[in-house]
Length: 258
Image 1 (cartoon, helix red, strand yellow):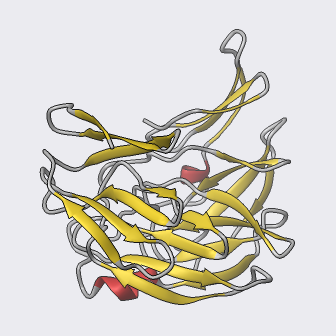
Image 2: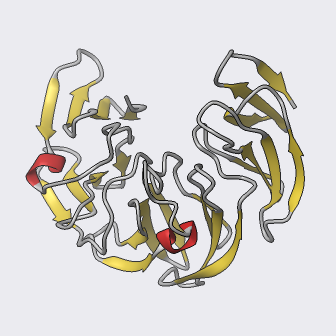
Image 3: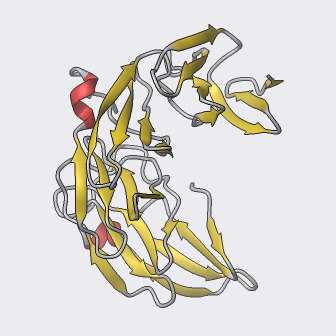
């Protein structure tokens, strides 16, 4: 269900039921496999697991979710357990983690259904946590808090969005990478599926009206100000190349160049 992560002659995959597998790209042979989700009593929502495995210089990293651990890491070469993080709360979301660096501090940025976390990729220590669920104002039933889009990081700011009428949230990451603070929230760009694009100081993506309908939105990256909202078929996915946006609405398959 997830996009494979490829490095050299190895392919890393997360299954919909929690197995992490490393394959040899040339012949498909299994080099190692683990199931962190079962081993560490992970919990997820009804739709299973849809993350891509994150690779650091040494480890293959996956989210577990639940009371025991949020994230675990395995040796990329042999699959041995390297570390497991603690858990401030929340179960596994559908999004993938990212790896960033700020002020010399490398961080795995990952999100459960309740928290955004900054984790040390060397040892799994939680450097900081931010309770994103506080912005959702009780809208946590029936899958609310289920992030499908990976966090977006640029120039000291982190952006997260989850659909379902929940506000998108921007956080400031301290210069040393060791703490975060609230920047802004905005309900216009509450992306359900399909991710967002940051280009020349603006965010682009689709908003959620219901599970079958949405609009297209542009926000200012620094302030969250709405630049424009456009109705066009339906919500969907977006990428950027050569200064143009390619958008694909998810119901009927229309594609636009913007």
